[in-house]
Structure formats: C-alpha cells, structure tokens
Length: 270
View 1 (tube, helix red, strand yellow):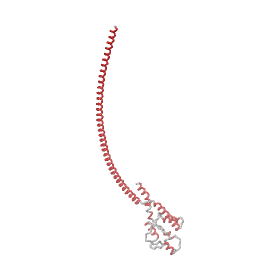
View 2 (cartoon, rainbow, N blue to C red):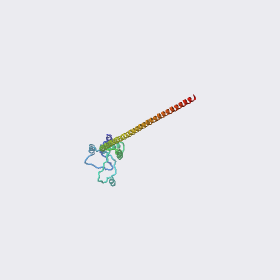
View 3 (cartoon, rainbow, N blue to C red):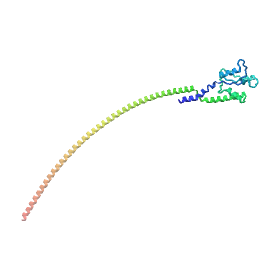
View 4 (cartoon, rainbow, N blue to C red):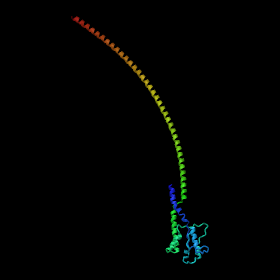
C-alpha cells in the first residue's frame, strides 16, 4: 500500500503535465520567411488556430516586423533541416508562448528578443521538468513493479511454505526416529537393569547360602568344642576328686600313724 501511494504521488506530476505537452510550438520568424496566403486571411487563420487549439502569431505581429534583408541562399540552406528517415520529435512548450511573446513585446522588447527569451525560458522549464521527472515513474510502471513484487512475494511465500512444510516433515520424521531410538534404549536399559538385578539377587542368595552353611559349620564346631570342653572339665573334676580322696587317705593314714605313735610313746612313758 505504501508503494502504491508513493507511486501515485510521484507519478501524478507527469500525468498532470501531459495536457501541457499537447500545446504547439511557436516557430521562429527568422527561420520561416513570410509567405503570402491568398486562400485564407489572417482573421480566419487566428480563428481557426483558436478553435483548433493551435495558437500562432497574430497577423499584425507579422506585419509590424521591421523590414529585413532577403535571406541569402546559404542562409536558407543552412537553416533547412537535414534529411532523415526518422520522424523528428516536436518540442512542446509548457506555457502559452504566443501570449508570453506578445507580453514581452508590450513591455518594449523586439520580436526577436521576445522569441529568444521565450526559447530560453522554454528550454529552462523543459530541463527543469526533465530533472524533476527523471526520478519519477509512470503509474502503469509502478503498478507493474508492484504486481511483480506481489508475484515475487507470493512466490517467496509459497517457497517458504514449501520449505516450512519440508522442514516440519523432516523434523517430525527425526522426532519420531529419536522417539523410537529412545524407546529402544529405554527397553534395553530396563532389560539390563532387570538382568543386573537378577544376577545381583542370585549372587546375594548364593552368598546367603554360603554364609548360612559356614554359620552351620561354625555352630557345629562350637558345639564340638563345647562338648570337648565339658568332657575335659569332667575328666579334670574326676581327677580332682581322685586326688582329694587320695590326699584324705594319706592324711588319715598319717594322722592314724601319729596317733598310734603318740599312744605308744605315752604308754612307754607311763
């Protein structure tokens, strides 16, 4: 929208200048000598120029010119346009040249000076308009450029949509592939964990059985040791009883012998 507004804004001066380009050119009086016209009077010529939109110099202006020397042959030949197969482009003016020349003549300028000033001013205006319109474009060209831009934008949008759909499909496929790989890895890890847990449980059960067997063996050894200790204690107790009995027997014998000896000595002394 901004491009269309810009184009309409800057293309309007050239369109507005189009009616001015249809205005005729006032020809130089020096380049074209006077010709007698027997068929059409000057009043009819002015009326026809006014009706057809082609202003020309008034007949009185031509009659009021000072007398000039007849042009020479070389001057006429030099002023003739060279022959060319292509059509010459007519220079259009952007203001009323006849009115401008007449106003200059009313101000005191001669006809040649007025025509020269008119030409200079026309050249300046033409150059200014060319400089202004050099950076402008026609509305049709701007619409064509806008249409091309819209076509390019639509093509770019379709390409972006295609690329987006392609990228989306690729992303979806890669996501599904990664999901499948993650599921496989998860199942593999679960199997590994279960296998490890089973092996650890088996090892623990084996260790428990071995430890239980070793504990039973140690209990048996402890029981055997306790039995042996009890046997040794009983034997020692029997030995102590035997030693006590023998000691008592010896003491009884000694006491009996001493008593007998003392009785014998007492009897002897008595």
